[in-house]
Length: 346
Image (cartoon, rainbow, N blue to C red):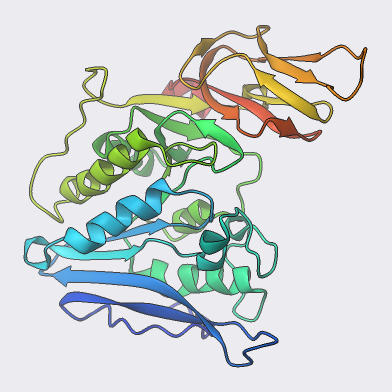
């Protein structure tokens, strides 16, 4: 029996069954003081030809993460429909109010859209966007690549990421897709708050779900854009949507992707108080448990000593705190270690 999906308030000009290239705007209603029947326009591109899988490429679910929207926009302008076997759906900047506001949270409802899935057709603006993506796009999709960076929260080692999947076959397919994408790292992780994320929705629908972290610290990472552009094309090659073999050689000469994991809460270091954070390392550095991740300074207090925060596990620094001023409870470091399937399963 087909799953019944509630009608969305968002209108869609794209006929996903039609061959060729289509480009237009989703129109999400947003009534305002100055525009009772106003809409927000969200760019969407569909390219379909022949037979093959459907690959969804999304960016801008968080508005202060730039590399994905840039990489997907390049592909949307350049991909030749005649060279496609299957369907490619591209939404470069989905959460457009947040993108134009340069913020993680939507300025419309102050929500993190990536904590709103599977959404609600009659809910807040972010919930409405989440519902449309989950209920009206994902049923078409075989492979999802959702491009993120660490925004203003962190800097990140350039990586793809995925949840640990108990199903061994799906885990292998997802890790193979990550290897094909060709970022320096692929991180298998167990997040702090993952149940309402887009990744979790894709997994529940049985499609391959791959995310990215391609920079951060509130700026456009040059290498992150390059890896994102190459990775999007590599995924299409891997699934035979376009011809060619993925190119995965890294800048340092290594031949492919290093698979890592963030296994448990000990991989995270949190701030015990608010202050000005001085990090010890940059992302990609090897670190050890007990070493200082950095110090919280209280520059407004003349004689107050800094508070040291330690790493709680050995490995490679995946995420390092982005803003100088932090609040109590903020994560300031996330450490990844080499992936071991037996250990991950435990």
